[in-house]
Length: 72
Image (tube, rainbow, N blue to C red; front, top):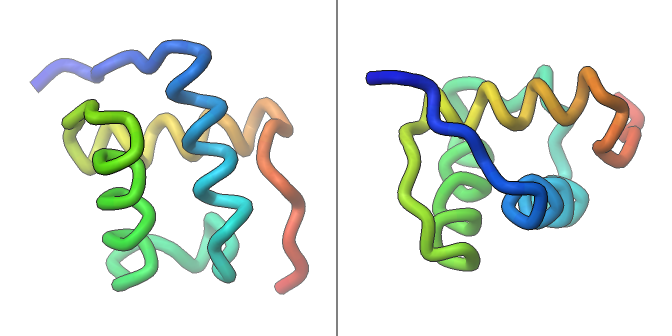
């Protein structure tokens, strides 16, 4: 399945959802928190994307310094 690109509005929503969570990006893989973030994104945007694309978008936002910095 090809990587699904997100619009600017969807990336902003992803950053907002991440800011509401308690976990850092590094702590998310294979956790219930990741599933909660993914489901919140799908519910709020109405956009169904693969979990892999969701993760890639989240990692891309972190690399671009567009996520709230959280303490570990």
